[in-house]
Image 1 (cartoon, one colour):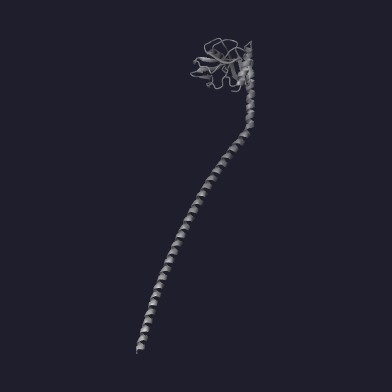
Image 2 (image 1 turned 30 degrees about the vertical axis):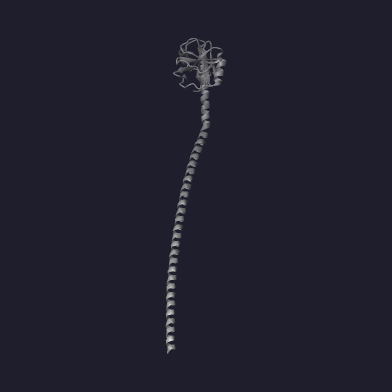
Length: 250
């Protein structure tokens, strides 16, 4: 009987042991299941983040490509406009070249006409005077007076002759007048107005041939030319001759 009791106790102990193991196995199973679920959540979260990052990169790429495309369109538009302008300028130049032979012909005809008019005018002047004093140089006719007058009366005489007091534009013209006039002093179309020397056409003096430095004088002074260069004196002084100029080509 004691053996039966021992067997029953042993059986109960074995039953209790099996039940505990089963409980531990069930606990381990649910723990593993929770771990799997957590891993799945982490994996899904990571995938979602990767997809969001990928979408963002695609958006940035598309935006950048769009900006580059707009920039290229802008550059091409400017190049097209520049080509159109160049073509327009080229067409204008072609038209000008086509018209140029006619313009040159017209200028030549005008030059011939002016030259003939100048010859006719010089002939008339020659017939009016026993001592012809007009000379020609570089499309201008010059009258070298032999009388003495003040600056204003000298200019008045030039105007009566269809001319005006000479305006000296360059060194070559100055050298020509030096040879033509000799050692005397002659009034020219230059006078002091305020603080500036001005020609009779209203332009301010820029190129000069003064014998000395730029003269500082009152506003009632006028300029003279001679072989030595320019000098200045009171415009009222009536002891100088004068030079008139008539331009052939105005």
